Amino acid sequence: MPTRERPADVGARRALSIIRSLGDEVHEARLRCGLSQAQLARLAGVSQTRVSLIERQVHASARVADLARLLAVVGLELSARAYPGSSPVRDVAQRALLDRLRGRADASIRWRFEVPIPIAGDQRAWDAVLEAPAAPRATPLRIAVEAETRLRDVQEIQRRVALKRRDDSSVEHVVLLIAATRFNRRIVKEHAQALEADYPMSGRAILDALGHARLPAANGLILL
Image (cartoon, rainbow, N blue to C red):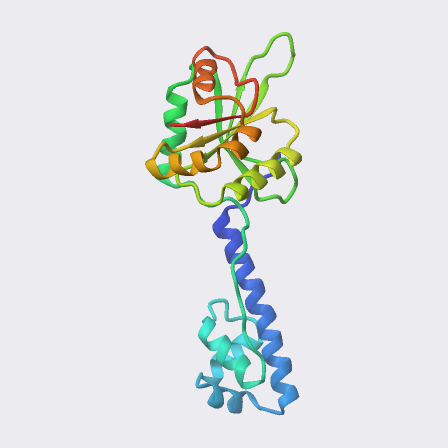
């Protein structure tokens, strides 16, 4: 199983890489404009020392505002946006939701949390993976659990789970665990047809199976 890098470390490494790349762009554009570091600093309203550090790629904590001003002076525009990446840090509400389901399961079922997708360098992980003996097979069955405290984009969740299943053949089925809030119940009702197609097993059947030391025999959805 690959070693999973901490999300904060991934973010720090990416930030340093971005700053270094922008430092190169500032340097090259300044030379094309025929400006000295002192002239660029004066026009941008930053110190010459800061310009030097950014261009030499040693200013690991360069401010976005400074980079944007320097780039604007040399005719470049700084643009940035966030993209979905690795799973976010597990928050208290999500872990509590998982623990509620665990409390309804037989103690013989093994639980593992934040289980990485078995692809080197992949930052995705299942919220939980459950294992239980399954005769007559020599290896235990494995199901994954994805926990959602607040539903937002149902289609995005379905795509995310489908891609994880594609890339992790060790998981037989997936349980979509949703906090039983009024808001979430309404969203589930509005998307009932699409959700039932992907998660046909009922919450009652899932709880019955787990309570009797069995893993669900199909994908299922449970409001808890």
